[in-house]
Length: 307
Ligand code: ATP
Image (cartoon, rainbow, N blue to C red; front, side, top):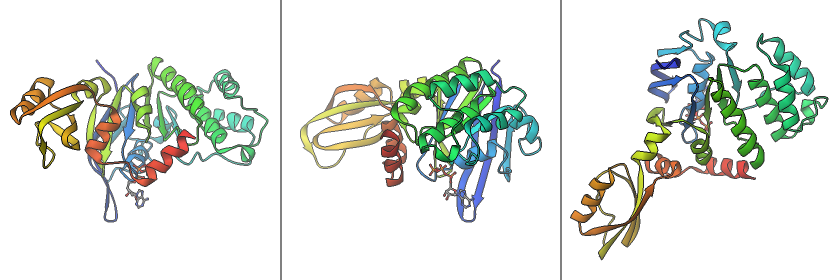
């Protein structure tokens, strides 16, 4: 039987007129990595804040390890590692002081693991946090979130500020180690290629609603991107079974679709076209087909992350 670490039912949250979460159901099982994706303002951080008990569920229920995180914060929070979007760690401490300070809150703190990660990141424990670069600060915050080997690791935009090497190699290693040890990771990211690389399961949020919630394996096998050709010029994009997005013009079109290949080929044939080639759609293509193009905030964040 799979052990549920997170169980959210029918969770809604309004901020004034903004519906930040709208009837959200979400479950996370032990030992898996969950990627949470959505445009700016989609509701990811609001969902994470409910997991941590920082926001009380006004409608619906939130259970972490079978407990309400607002009613039993000590029992729940000691088993969670959290990297906030703001990396809020005290500037006046040295790295070593922060490690000892954070360690004091956790009976499971593994000083050897913290030291190993500091050395992997080439971080000098004697350095004051206020002297660190944004990326180094993100690394220190990540180490303090994982060194007590939490049962549930929650990372809000973990890649923000990390350089390409740290992002690809070290973040991968940290996240995979946690899940291989039978612990659960939930992370939000705008980097869809990273979500695709790291996650077992993808949850897409759009305007507070879950629009896709499935294992990456199923998402991959259900979504295709096909190039199609018509003998004659088309005045408008064709209407096709299962099509989520169509681009192109004239005789050539590219279609992201959820239909089976057989059904799609029949549908194209019926209107006088032919399928030239097909492949699995990338998560980015699926995201754009459901949510639209990333907005400017996301693009600038993406550029920042890939610097
Ligand atoms: P981003 O990717 O930009 O970090 P997000 O998916 O994390 O976005 P949230 O921070 O959860 O999005 O915000 C969801 C919506 O709720 C947004 O419209 C935001 O403006 C609104 N919101 C969030 N927190 C508050 C708050 N404390 N007061 C008022 N509105 C809020």
